[in-house]
Image 1 (cartoon, rainbow, N blue to C red):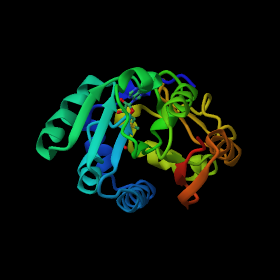
Image 2 (tube, rainbow, N blue to C red; image 1 turned 45 degrees about the vertical axis):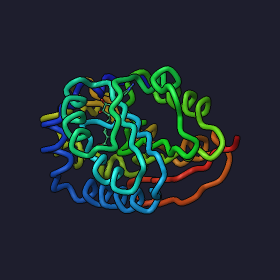
Image 3 (cartoon, rainbow, N blue to C red; image 1 turned 90 degrees about the vertical axis):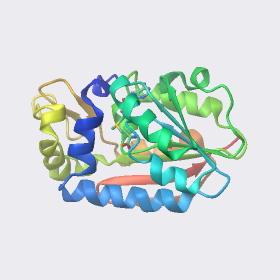
Image 4 (cartoon, rainbow, N blue to C red; image 1 turned 135 degrees about the vertical axis):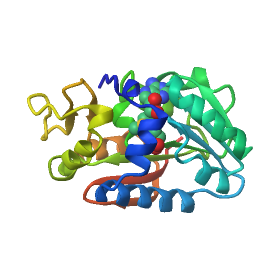
Length: 230
Ligand SMILES: C[S@@+](CC[C@H](N)C(=O)[O-])C[C@H]1O[C@@H](n2cnc3c(N)ncnc32)[C@H](O)[C@@H]1O
């Protein structure tokens, strides 16, 4: 799905509205994601964070990893990401388009774990299929993939409340274009976000094959660590 969502985010807005949110579902999601990532990381691993934003997760990731490679396309967010990386020491920032991942990354360490956090896959500029194809192309050997996504069944009950709390960033919901059955959320400003059906989640798992290292299935979100087939 093509989405201009990247243009709605600024480091300041994202920090104020998402990281410091009072929305209960979003807080539960961020806590679960942080716990999941803390367990997944290990000394000596390299995280490659696709669509890293302003670096919300980089401190946590860098604590457990040998290195973090953080990629984003949005200049406003990159500027704060670079500030944070400078303080952390083991975070390399790349300005790049993750739909062209193989071009953005010169070398991929053998033990890298690719990460797509906080439903970034649902708002990728350029379309999520391109990112999944690139990931399949570049992930070899021991590479892991961590995907963290919102689930379609929760869009109507919990998603609308969450997006209402984010309306100064993304705009007000457009119910004439939002499709709860398909898990497509659209605002009057044209922001789009995909929430994933159970069928789509199964298809993503099947697309990579291999095995599931760990998984969290909440009514509102799904976080999985995959070791894809070679
Ligand atoms: C929902 S935000 C999440 C940010 C971060 N992953 C987090 O968990 O806080 C999505 C991010 O993906 C970035 N993004 C969207 N499309 C991209 C693309 N094609 N290439 C690189 N970054 C992209 C946006 O700029 C934005 O920072």
